[in-house]
Length: 261
Ligand code: GLY
Image: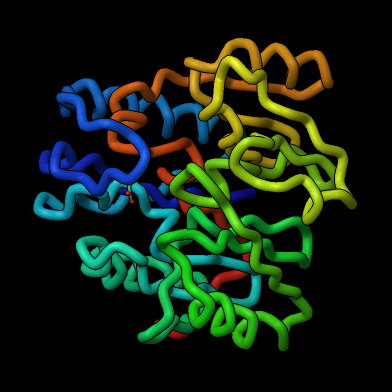
């Protein structure tokens, strides 16, 4: 069983950080409806959804993935690359501390959870505008004692590593070759996105199920053709905030509760 930590959409989301997406008006009520559909999809895939209360003045706070990296052994609270996002960390730490021991990334390190892709015990971390060498080195020092490796991977033309590559199964990734090299992922089976859908590489995997945006039907067909079970959700308003589906949840395995209080 999985726990999915999520947070309600902020009414200030129109003031979100944007890096590679042009600003457009965001319909906040519609974004909140889409976010509810997203949480229902996570439940359909077998998650217990824990929703944190809204942070009205933090525009990007729905994108909880960026503020923590959670493994069975601990939760690493990040220091997000965008200064406006750093106040999001404390309340997610308060939620996570009942499930995992906490560690933290310290200045001058920066790292966004959206840059962190894990395949088994191998972490791949985007060397992006949001995640720097110090942040990556700190993550390595924190997880190596638990048997994990950490490899930096350059990205180009996208916000996060997980804009460019995500996990589909234990041995398969979905990849956007314009935004990341294939070479770091050569040990895995690689499925390319459909080239007409450049933003389609970000999907949530929950066991043998996938959740992806409804706006990428061609890539969805590829995944169905490869035998994957896929749920599609309309997240168009969240995409205007440069959000993807992994950004909206932190997944952690249930049954690893930490009794630190
Ligand atoms: N708007 C998502 C981010 O830039 O972090």
